Image (tube, rainbow, N blue to C red):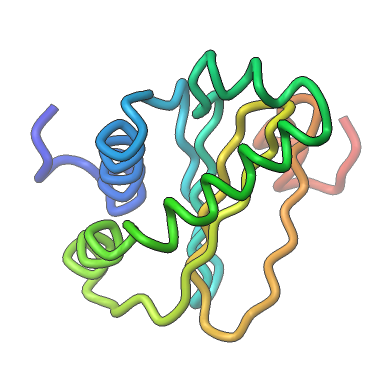
Length: 136
C-alpha cells in the first residue's frame, strides 16, 4: 500500500509495528492508534514472542516481561518518537510503555503531562453503539 494514501493513524500504526519487529523480532498481530487532544496511544495486540508468553505464565515471570519491555522501550524509543514527529509534524514530549503479559498486549502512550488510563475490553463495541446513545 502506498504511504501517501495512508492516514496519519495508519502511518503511525505501521511505524509502531515496524519498530516492535525491529526491537523484538516479533510483529504484533494488530495495532490500534488513538489520538485524543495531545495524547497519542498505540496498542499492539499479541506483541509478545512465544518465549515471553511462556515466561509470563506466573506473576514473577510476568513482572520480568513487563520490566524488560519498559526498559527496552525507554532505551530505544527515540527512532519511533522521530517517526511520529515526521508523520504528525508534532514533537513527542513524553512517552511510556506498559505490557499486559497475560494477553501479550503492549501499550505505548505519548502524552504531555497527561494521565493515561487504558481499558482493554473483552470484545469490540460497534461504531453505531459507541457513537449513539449506548443502547443496541
